[in-house]
Image 1 (cartoon, one colour):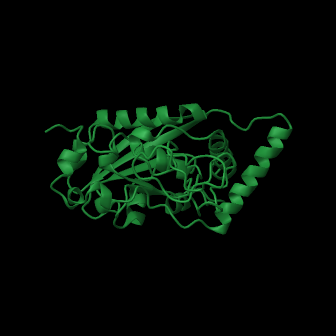
Image 2 (cartoon, one colour; image 1 turned 60 degrees about the horizontal axis):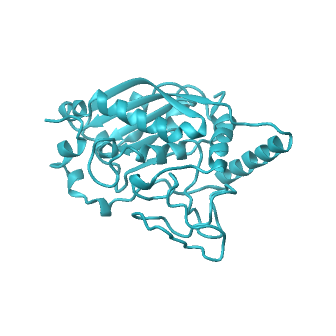
Length: 277
């Protein structure tokens, strides 16, 4: 058995029965007024820093913990260390232009037939979560509902210690890791979900006149599926849909960039909401 190809191992499971078209790229939804207010605060701080000739974008190094959760020990072990290393390499490549890097601290492998299908995540996180609120925990499961993944946004007033794992999670299907087949098998689902971990919204959030709270992201009415070059769902507003943006829903092969504003916002939100907890 080739351990790198997680999809091969999962083909006989319920997860393998779902086609790519039946799954949503991301299950992160429900933007709150408080989350929008955090963006407004960050934008004001960025504008003040720019006016003063300062930068808020110092390089960030994020300690990262990878948790492989499967229904059996054999399936968990089938996600090899090489696959994890390749996932870290893809993630670092995606975020390098943003001045953000990820340093793997530990990989865990757990057999639990409830946790592996996105069941009882509270107990799972309590058992597996490592580090502090500034540290990234990625949980790779066999199934994440009807999605390829989802991740919580950072928030203020998080209690240190046990309070951290209750509000911090990034769950991603294991068959999105590098070496898998299909348009979402290059490891870039993690880039999308980690964008949420830093506080970014979807580029199509609330349509043409809603927005992701980042000034240089073109307006976009609907999520992108596939790679429709020239897509423009807000023709009366500047710019084409940002189909190459990690926070849209395009295929992995089309994911290429964050805007300068998104890069700045990730640093701002991290420093404002995660650092120091």
